[in-house]
Image (cartoon, rainbow, N blue to C red; front, side, top):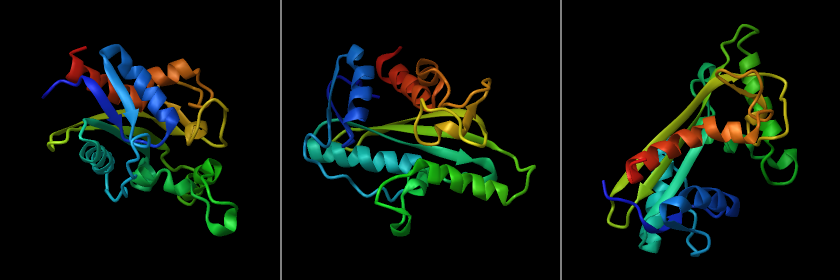
Length: 207
């Protein structure tokens, strides 16, 4: 596997994600720029798995820019729901026209998950995990993927204000508070993204 150095395109139009990933890679001499800043379009995420979607985004950014590119795809997988919402994690938060203005409502998404669990009765198994895939792609077609995971269970009602997405209903193994109640530094240390990023660093920089 070739090493990673110099300029890297982060396959996102989200300034916050660029800042977060850029800070993580800065110590390794990697200079990050977003696909959005380069005017690259966002490809349709038509994959059936996190790996599929991460590679779609990374390959599109690499081919469009002529530079190596990094993309991530992540989501919540609930055992009793057959792994759903999975790659549709964000889609479950999308408001319908009759639910208000366009955008994402994460309480709507959490309520959908809880409603489906409730249909299975009070003794439903509530295990879940967050998954993250980081995909690296080069303009010549070479690619690599790194998978991260944090396991736990779902709780109800939602608790905490420190997180985002499904964090208020997710309790990681070994903890009693939700991700949205957990100290952000501790959450980042144990998260699915931290797990995936540690594997990327080990593979690319030998650390």
